[in-house]
Length: 197
Length: 197
Image (tube, rainbow over all chains, first blue to last red; front, side):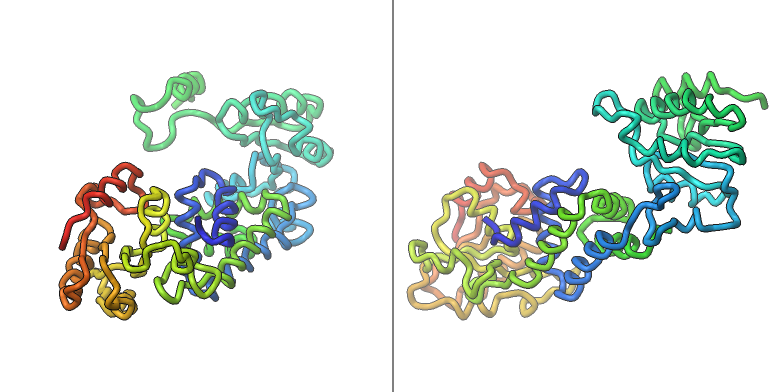
């Protein structure tokens, strides 16, 4: 019903996460109504990301160079590795400004339901990074079934490196969360993981 | 925090309607994870829409040629003109398959709050289209304050063309609802129940 080129654009927008037909139409129409320079800039930005963005050859984080800015930074502690599922998780941890180690991005998590196996994610390159100086590996996968499965799998494998201290992010009540609104699993974990005051 | 090219893409996505920082980040990351061909296709689709899409020189609807497919169609009744706010509204009415006349797209509506005046929308070209053969003009603007204001304004101006029968879509439209989000039955009833202004 739309002219061909618009239909094609709508189909492209639909490939983005949680974008249905109506939303894709709104986005396409917004682009039609944008001024031409802005729209061209948009296309250019897509192309640039496609051409420039690579994964850091050490940690798998996003970069435009061979190494990401974190792996390149000599002031960081390269013997503490924080393992996360996605590049966005790196950004989240960097935002709090507390962590001074480096990262390892798995690009996914083990999932029995979706058929994602340990060899489908970036685990091998993590093991290759471990050397005699490696002090600690922090398992910072999501607090979901998949994230927990992955953390469990990694903690078992990492027993082969007894000099490495393996930790997992604490799970419990989120700050500002009301106890009676929190789900049961969170509450169970908060109770089990209670700490001496 | 993200590499530059990703930050630029996030800013582009934020220009789309109702897309905030978090959503823009998700979209940008989805593009990073897309295969390169799909991402290039995306950029290409944006460029094609930018280059090819024009407004029909008669009715203002979207087209890749001089005239839109509806204005070009000799089987349609060119003496009945349905006036809508946006190209998406044309699609919505075409979808119900009931209307055989042509359209006129205003590309907006009069709005006192947003300072959109009658001369800012496609009204002049509508008046120019009216000739001795014009039978009916259906005011199919949204059932919102702005749409109603525009319909009222047009119905007053169109009194200068006493041979033209001016109608407004029936108030089958839910108040506050946008025309292109309405379900088909409501739209059919609104079209059938249109009343003389």
